[in-house]
Amino acid sequence: MRHLLTVADVMTPDVVAVPEDTPYKVVVTLMAEHHISAVPVLGRYGGVAGVVSETDLIRKEEFQRTARPPRVLGWRRRQARVRAAGLRAADVMSHPAVTIGPDATIPEAARMMATRGITRLIVTDGDFLTGIVTRSDLLKAFLAPDDRIAQRVRRDVVRHALWDPVGLEISVQDGVVTLSGQVDRRSTTEVAEKLTAEVDGVVGVVNGLSWAFDDTARDKVR
Image (cartoon, rainbow, N blue to C red; front, side, top):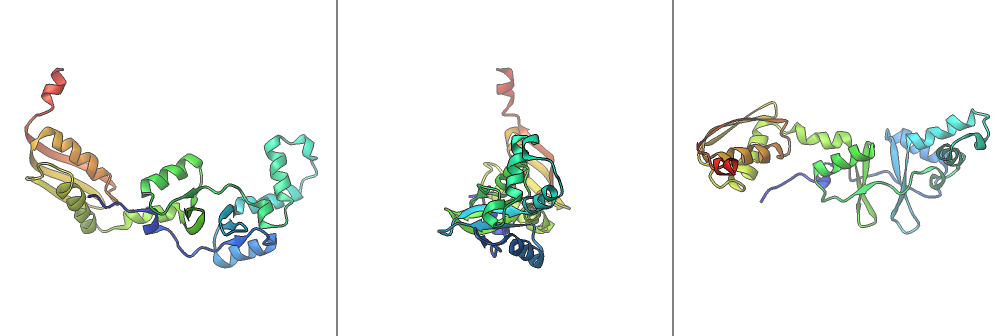
């Protein structure tokens, strides 16, 4: 059985959050005091109602300095102007918040951030806040030392996934895994490379494996 790092392994569990009726200035003060760029906003029953980021807060500065009437602006800009006039967290927050579960894998979190074009995800268990995970948190997987990565490859790939691992050798340098030696079948070399690339902390894979029997030749003839 493979053991993948999850969001729960790298997230920040102690999150500064605010209720919906928190005044704008208090939100700004909390973010400055804790050196953070966003805070989740909690609804009346404790669930995550939205998130206030620096982007949300800076709109007040942007629109307070312009004399353009709202009708000149497009729909999105008019909405932004309305939010910029807000006085409480609920008025200025982005909602719904983009959330992810604590059991999601690191690649799943990375794909969600990339797809949404955001730098953080609110971690929830059901509706309730359990943490926050940022892009820098996701990079923690690559901080593992080479010997730890080698152990993961041996455990998750060699022992638990391959049919004929005898003859497969592993070395790791700066997160790059080199597979060498000879295995029974050519298909094993391809599977080994794919699975190794998916191991937490692996930066790249150099596949130097050879094989005794090309079990893919039949498929190529077809």
